[in-house]
Image (cartoon, rainbow, N blue to C red; front, side, top):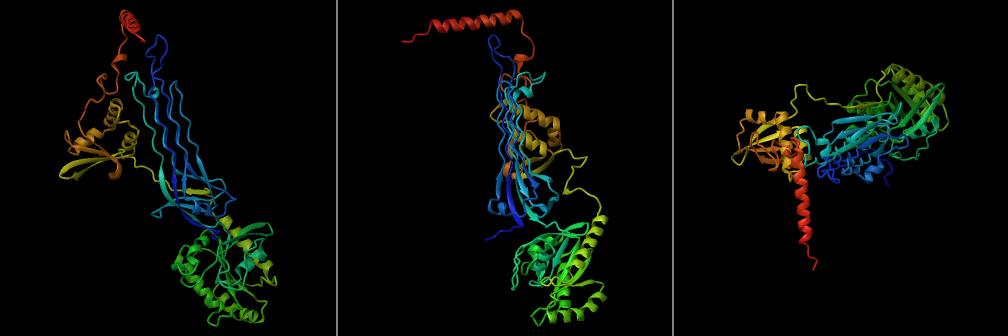
Length: 481
């Protein structure tokens, strides 16, 4: 049964924003008391947060689809809808967030650091928020925006100071078990360790973490064995320790050739040339192992390696090794530049970006002008196309943004097709430059002529008297039988 997962594909969906409300305040003697529609609530975000108690991505392997809650719609009486609740997803320390193309979006290191993986949709404005001196009583409200829907890849890279690398059954798990309080599985057959093991070591005043990276064999960097799955866990380590087996029973292996093979795999993986190395000749409690260690030690030291002869079983040379590793870790920490605990990739917008583009396409022999941009596409999503007044408001916004001007520059003529949005989800309409949109009651787009100027008192009295007379006639003509 799988208990450790360090790479998953996660499908996240943020909450949708609630729709705004189109409402008019009504009370006795105030048939049109003004707009009072509230705004819709914001949709909940999907947030990845580092939690020290989480060590694997197993939960997301079993349940890869996660969705935040939607915002509530606005109501009359200036009552705004409730915001959707954010969905907090705990991830292990050292989680890298990428898109499906492999581009890094965030590198989460440090307890409590977080990244918004999917942004909740904005709530739509109610007609009270849309009112202005020119548009005193909007008969429409904006729709809530849909939340982001994204496919992301989570990849765990172990955060440790020291990495133990070497062939299977070289004694890495035994070594980490005696240097720290970790209790990995130990057996006398290859690939006993199937997941990275972490342990905490105290050497004087230095406390550091040590990781056992399993599964390195020839060809590991190209995917052979388990090495490719776990080589990424070496990336964050400050010190590399080659654990070499001096008592191997395989006739075609020796400590020097094992070192050369593992070094070649690390070189092929890349990015590890600057890490200090230490060589540990393990299993010197075995007579043949002691003799072989004394034989190869001069050759390794001639290459510039610092060599330690140890035995995890007999506890030989462990103290010297522990303090040597602590010294290297302390030096690496002192030389490390201070930086933020998390790295988020930001791609800023260019200063000369108009916010949208207009491109000409051919649609069955007829010209089609496609408008792409964050604002136009968002405004289209917010528009209720069953409401003429809302369509007129959209036309005003697009004109102020400069879309009409760019369409003219691109050669668009009255009646040409204009699509706003991507090919698979675009709104297409016939373009009429400076077209007045809206219901018959509208003057200019989005205006209500009933509120453009105050009516004389005598006219208001005549209207109220006419309403009372009409009500009286309806009562007199009412026949329940």
